[in-house]
Length: 112
Length: 113
Image (cartoon, rainbow over all chains, first blue to last red; front, side):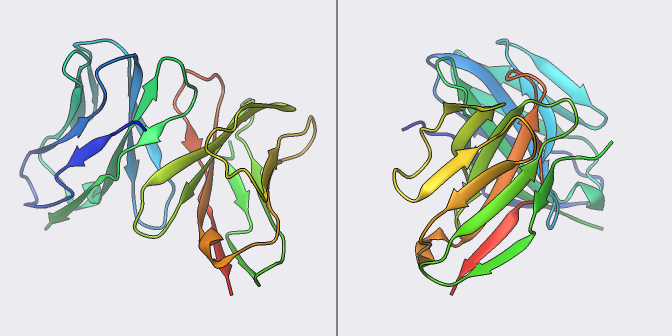
């Protein structure tokens, strides 16, 4: 059974704060790490697919880094806005498998 | 450009009935994935299909659950003789290739009375 852990489980920040959270995954047989953003009552929205150790991807104020050797990825949000409030999910894909194994997510609440 | 369409959004069944959940992938996407989210749990992979083929069904319960993705029409997740424990949100996702991001539908909330 693959273990994908996300921390913290939930996070409250003030508008304008920068924040980050962690996804840890097995460091062996890595294929890809996906990040999704899931707003309440909507469907998960793909943010990044990361495949190379040392990868850094950016989309507006959101960026992510990847360390496959130690099995972790960070997601950063710069200058959080209330509309960033959502659950952020990471999902790990093992080399021999097609399926994604999801973490339980980090619930971010940005207070105005 | 319509996204992944799932219907119905909500489905209520009595124990012992059958539940059929439909998923139309995004245009041009031939890879379909089904996930289940049980109460207080994360998304769990169930099955991955390409047109007319089941590629990986390692997350499907061995009994009562089946999935198909016919040449024409939507992908169907079928649950026979439903039990209370089948109550969950069922999400479908699609991608153009297996290595691409998966685009999710809004899910079907299944409630078993």
